[in-house]
Image (cartoon, rainbow, N blue to C red; front, side, top):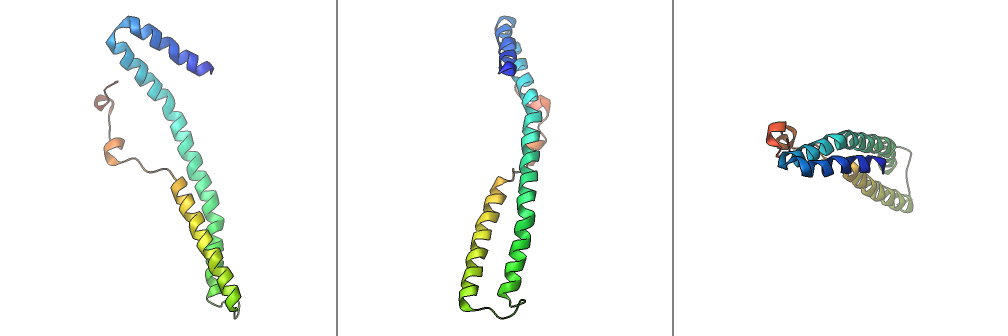
Length: 118
């Protein structure tokens, strides 16, 4: 809440300083939000990795069991393993959706001169 009030103050003074001052305020706000965006991205990558690591192991062991590496399995055991495999695939898809997308080349190469608020 304190940071929001600080952000309001430059906007109020910007109105009195002319049209370019508003662009400076926007640029300042964007620059202030960039570390938060990076922290969010790092958190999502870390969470994704921590979830994916044990899931990969589970999938591998399911495949081994279905292939008979632990000995013969009954039809009921195979049905259960296939259900587990299907649900781990759903979980993997959710984890994939959790990972942030990489910025496109166009957005990544955007320089300060390309931004209207610079």
